[in-house]
Length: 262
Length: 256
Image (cartoon, rainbow over the protein chains, first blue to last red):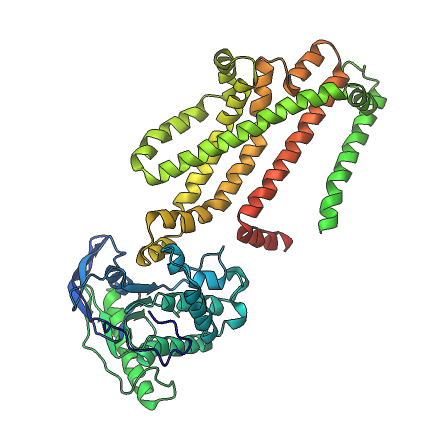
């Protein structure tokens, strides 16, 4: 683990981030088959985005990879054969900050829970908080912060885990448009070498951040072929290609929503 | 706001005393039925040592009962949270312990533990145990599942999940349990004293009543009420300190 203050000069990780494959994922809820023997590839060192209408089962897939889902079946494995446990960090739609800890302490929650806190980690947390625009807020309690600040702190907490696989479940959906764009930029920058799975219902977010975008539709759900936008993320909102792709995606999603609701 | 909060109880207190005096003057009720404020003040002055001695004993009973009851209640709540079989076995016991009125148990406790402080402490423990256990257990079980997921992905041990997340998250609930316990602890101690004892404010009240020293009885009642109030508000302050993040939220709401 590196603790340098400049993030661009960090050496590449010892093990490259693995490809994660979720196989045989099945979920039956209330006698409805949400998905059946579904497989998802989350490719190494890039952002895989699952896009789909709500209720299609995106979150369940992500939680299966995280090892948090007990109602669905499926197994997640990595291409390097090593277990996934301890190599995943997770960010949810709610910030999940602990109200009795300051933003800095929240950012260091992983180390606190594993009882491995150190001065080096604290320096790194302060650096990351600064990079996320929270330099003057590190000692504030979450209740004194805006929703945007809290979600920034949650992002820093996710980054502090410094793990090769990052799972994000609609992490920016509760934010206003401007804050959302800012946080997308920060996340794309700091997670560029990781294997990321992002679940979202926002086509623009998918197109800005995704290397591979899958639309999840139907009941039982299927995954569409990967859409691969040009250029490296984070892509600019003003990019005309993006607008064209977004229009296509919105049509596809509208169709998917109709299909799912039947 | 704070100034008004400080003055309001004083005004209420003075008002009640005035009404009391009015009733005594207007109805000409005999002193052995309702003594006036001046008579009770006289009893405070003349029998201060007796009052202080008995108040000390009752206070020890309340405090010891509160501490033991809280400790046992917290331990039970933790055990029930972490061991499903313990929950199955202890829940009926808990419910039964509440179904039998403590007042009905008082003679038995006195029979077993004697006329000394032990039986009164046991009464206070019994009456405190349920609110503390129920509130703390509830708090421990209602941890935000998102926090637990987070701890799981972060590879937290069960122990640090308990210490860092479940326990602090349950502190506001524990605080409400402690407040209820602080309010009922004096009841346990005094009921115990009424059933059989040779010391304490409850004993003093019965004793004074039998000797038609109603002024002393009232003085003992006031001492008890004051002690109970001070005790309750001290616990309230401690409960707020336990979970300052919670207090901030409620205070803001109250102000609006």
